[in-house]
Image 1 (cartoon, rainbow, N blue to C red):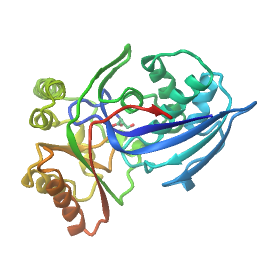
Image 2: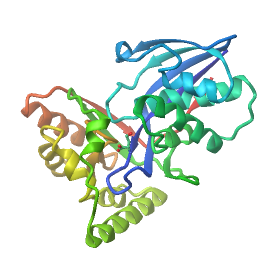
Image 3: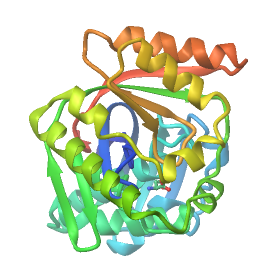
Length: 291
Ligand code: HSE
């Protein structure tokens, strides 16, 4: 029997739509895997009532199938479903890492990324690797069709999850189909700046690189109070703010010194709109860990 902790993640980071992702120090999903003749799943924890236990409908069931590794799997959810924090990806990542070890499959962390992404496709409909990659590998990741590149980083972050529901399906429907050459140039500049910031562990560069005039403004309309929360975060010292994944979580990069102030300012801004929210004061962290 093995226990695996796989972290929540934040995909996109503004300029890296469907490509960039970071592992967060917290929250996380914890799963336990035990060899069995057929796969069975128990789910408990945050939002477990919304997660099917049928292996054909659950992300970890698809991972067990792909690895030919039947198991009794207990999922303790720490990452709320539909939060924009890679909830299904955390479970898929934990299952991929745990079952690979339980059955001695010998796959590398990079090789497990497409397997976990297929598992995620069961619930989200599309096999994006931008959440499973950081949850498995840790740090900041660049997920491409042909593989994943990771950079270790420890940038301080604030992730604020409001009590708002945004479905990934709706959030993908509003993504514009075209962009101008000016927006392309701006996106390349921001993505390169953000990547340099991760490599140098420089929150200011990361924050500047979070800018995005294509996807984020279209999605911001789905999060009541988004602009006010961004303004409050920047006034409190954040280096940059954007939507985490498909939302509704809003994520800010900042220094350790400013982190608490940024978190409080973002919570207050949501509260001013009458929206309850929860803040995670965290940082770019490790990938899945086996105990
Ligand atoms: N990159 C994805 C999106 C992450 O923003 O839609 C959520 O699955």
